Image (cartoon, rainbow, N blue to C red; front, side, top):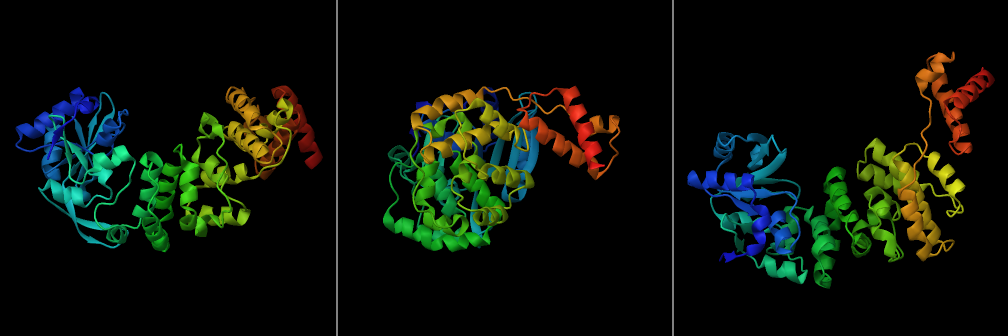
Length: 408
C-alpha cells in the first residue's frame, strides 16, 4: 500500500520529471528505487538515482532517445539501460522489473516481469526494496522503512536461502549494517553468516574487495570488521582485539580504505595473502605494502616527518604515510591521543617539495640511456631525501653527475 512522503522532493529534478512523464505518456511507469529512496527517508542527500520500470529495455532505449537523452546499454542482458544527459553529465540507471529463474551463488539468470512485487521479493534486504512513484508515494512491500528507522538490517525471506542464491550477500549484509545498522545482529543470524563464509571462496577477489572498500570508508569500519572477524579470519588471520575507538578516525587523512585496511594486517604473510585474494592492482599493492612498513620515530619532529614522507615512492603517499605513523605512535604509547589531531591537521596542509629531476635531465648531462639512468636517479633521489628535499635542480644535477662518475 503506497503512502505519501513529502521527503522525496530532492529526487524530482527537471530531468527525472521529464523521464517519468515520458514513461507515463507511453502507458508505462517509472519509479525511483533503492538507495536514493532510502537516503530521502533518512533526510540524507541522495547520490545515485536509479529507476525501475515494467517497460522492456528496447522500449526504454527508444523513449530515452526521444526526449533527447543518450541511451547506454550498460547491462542490457539484465535489463539495465543508462540514461545520460550530455549537457549536465548526469546519469540514471533504468532497469526493467525482473525475477530470478536460476541462481548458483555467484550469478543469476533473470526473466523480465511486469509485477512490482516479483521485482521486490528478489532483492536482498527490506531497506533495498523501496520504491517511489511520480506522485511521491512510497511503495514498501516488506516494512523496509520501519527497519531503516530502527537501524535493523533484515533479509527478505529466509536468510539461508538468500545467501545460497548469492554468496556476496554475506558481505553486503555487513556493508549495510556499517552504514545503517544500529541493532546488533542476532546471534543466530551472525552464526549463519559465519557458517556460510567459506562460500566466499567461490567469488572473485574484485567483488570481495569492492564490498570491503565500501565497509572501510564508513564511520563504523572498526566495529564492523570486528563483528566480521570470524568471516575474515582466512583473509586477515587471527585478530585478538578491535582497533581502539580513537576520536580521530574520522579525520580526512584517515578515510583512505587501503590506509584503514593496513591496521588489520599483522604480517607480510597476511599482506601477500590479502593482495592475492583481493586481486589488488599493482598500484594498490604497492600502496598497501608501503603503508605497512612502519618504523618508529619522533612524529612530533617536523624534520623527521618530512624526511619520512619524501622517502615514499609517490607524492600521493606522503600525507598517508605520516598519518599512519601518527596512529602507530598513539597505539604504541609514544604520543598521546589528544596530540594527534593537531598533527593530522598540520600534515593535511603541508606543502611537500617535488624531486626536480627526471630521466631526460640525466641524459642531458651525459648519462646514457638504459638501466643506469634508473640507478643514478634512485641514488640521487635518496641523497635529495637525506637533505629533506632542500637541494634545487642544479644541486641535484651536480650530485647526479658525481653519482654517475662513481658508478662508472
